[in-house]
Image (cartoon, rainbow over all chains, first blue to last red; front, top):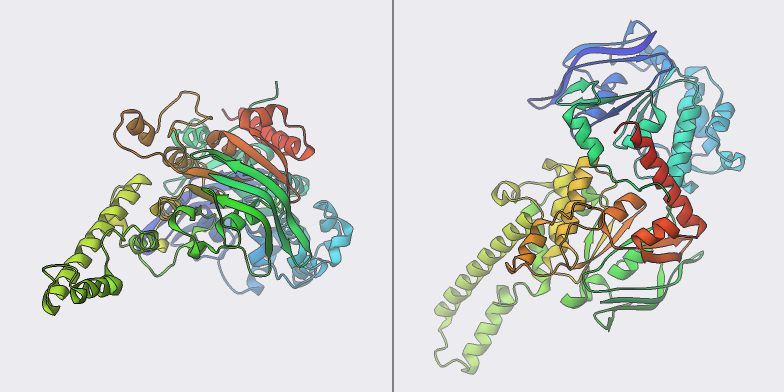
Amino acid sequence: MTLLECRGLRHGFGGRDVLRGVDLRVAEGERVALVGRSGQGKSTLVRALLALETVRDGVIECAGRPVTPGRVRSLRWFRRLVQYVPQDPASTLDPRARVRDVVDEPRLRLGQGDGAAALDLVALPGHLADARVGELSGGQAQRVAIARALAVGPRLLLADEPVSGLDPPLREHVLDALRRAPCGLLMVTHDLSAAAALCDRILLLHDGRIVDDPSHSEFRALLDAVPTVGPSR
Amino acid sequence: MLRVSELTVSGPAGPLVRGIGFDVAAGERVAVVGASGSGKSLTAKALLGALPAGLTVTGGIRIGGVEVRNVPCDRRAAGQRLGFVPQDTFLALHPLIAVGDQVALALRPTGEQAVSPSGAAGMRAASRRGVAGEQATAPRTTGRLRWWGAERRAAAGRRRERVAELLEAVGLPDAEGIVGRHPGELSGGQRQRICLAIALASRPPLVIADEPTTALDMITQDGIVRLLRERTGNSGDAGPGDEGGRAGEAGQDRAAGRGVEAGPGLLFITHDLAVAAALCERVIVMDDGVIVEDGAVGAVIAGGSHPRTRALVEAARRASKALEGLR
């Protein structure tokens, strides 16, 4: 069953359309990665799907209901279904706030969910629940951001570059946390190996449209550009 | 060329980098890898002479045989100044100054303009020569002003030429179309190329690149890695990760004896072992403020024994393996 869908989405800045007719469908519980070069509009698409942008044209639907930007109250039903994990938790979470309060805040606003269970899901050490966000490492802060999103009990997470800039061990902790999330995932990423390790489908955003074809030349170019380390001998 | 000995960087809570030592030969490309908080970036800042206030440095940092520990970057002689390529180009570049002017600014303090004195200092020098009668045909005041103006115009012309050369060297051949633009008008890859042009402007003996590709997409990252391979190192060759032995543009020029000078050395800070292997001949692994491994990239990947090294290698292998299904 389709949970989130957009059809014919067009949006841009100035006179230029960045999104030129995007059609995208994410089924219930499905994990989808969205890859592409910088500047192709991946983050713009995420903002549009979160009803943070008024798009020029097109339709966005969640669980069969239209999604349009509006008052906070009018979007509560949507926020209960779809939550957001930002790229840089250091700039989006209050560094002075305690982890427990950060995770509880959206749950209290939206009137559903379980903050403690969400902290368990992301495997954050228990003693850090009382730490302040500013005291955490990058990987710990990213797991708090995931727990904050999961605390509401959403059916889909939209994650924008959730592992960018993290060192390999931290990156794997965050990927594990996303893997344990009991909901669907739409993840924007540059990291093709993270997409391959975590997601059921990998889509390419190219020239303002979605490409669902692993043999597409742009996809091959992205893949060929990834440096690798060979297996042990 | 660079000798670091017993380097310790301490903060209020204690040492953060603890007595590390390593050498970098002229034109050598060395990667420094490690987890977040292992001391990689602090080491780089200590070498650059740009540590945040409140941190103290002990030990030795010798560049070209000259001790530069505790000498801030802007007080170092030209030969001891290191180039720097940052991770966050938005923070590194001034948003309101055209990028051509920012590259030109990097030329000024290095003696690049010193071949012909310009500005007020040049005029004063010309005036002194005239008054002292050192020149048989000392110009009168009007003549001196004309001479000074011509010198300034010539210096500005040389500066423009050098900026265009640098932009071409970093893969931005359309200098006219780039120099007047501001950082916000450029892509992440173009901004990173501008930062490399600034780093190369003073012809430093060593460029330190602190995670310069972390925020870039894979194709842009690949372009920056190729560029660093071409513009740094003695050989300008295709680098250790390029099995085809594809020589870079600068490497071909050097091989053909077309007068391209040897590139600076490179200290490449990253947590991505695969990128390090694609670019550098040698890798230093840091953990908790100390060096736990130092050797040829292939040897460290194949036989590194420290648990931190093994964790990084295994994580890189798992990431590579995940891609096999897509290839």
